[in-house]
Image (cartoon, rainbow, N blue to C red; front, side, top):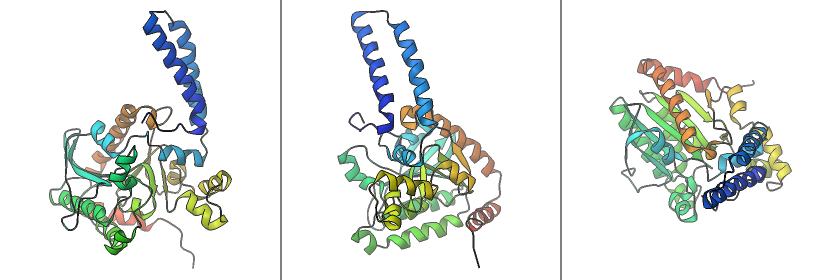
Length: 322
């Protein structure tokens, strides 16, 4: 994580943090009283974080959502849940490390948690395929969902992927069918489903874990049918320039406030000042509280009514013109 490049708009924050850290180290080494010097700098740092993060552009939110410093699914599992037991394999082809899942407890209650898992360095990214699942990953996810339904246990999914893997092997093994099957089965699963977009929610690869009774989004996450680069390349033949990427990010309306306004998601999970990557523990605690609140509400609804409401929720999305 230490070698992860700092985002351009975060550089003033990083420089001030470095200055404060150096002052503290100097004080520890030489036993100097520097509290009076550090306090104004920390106040300035707080003010700077507020100024930067309250005025993020859509493209800057894309950059934050993609940051490898952010907490991933396994980080949230470690910080939000207890007694996690990971389950492996789709029982048909192989284990896909781009999706992790298993039994866990949330506030003492048994749940099934499933999510995309990315890597923070080259070795882990190769293992996790950069968070882009193959068909067997989605089939593993579906197997775990059906297992949860069998034991009347809620399903919690965490979405964080650029999209499903589009390689030849994935297509040969039925990538589109695996995603479509998940959409179909999740639409009729007779147990509460709660999905949270924790980072980048990209295309059908994200939606394959996103058919839920409640869809939540972390404050600086994104959720879109296509990447901003792909959109800019298709519409304006330029997917690289910051200007076209910013234009695409704005037009796609992929940020949490936009999606809440359009009723694509149901709630926004606030992040700590400076983003979830600034304080994993605080971000996880907030998410945990929100998950508990929504699950308590969903548990009161009978399974048949739950399924009916879920279907109605997604059928109402979009606008149809004759």
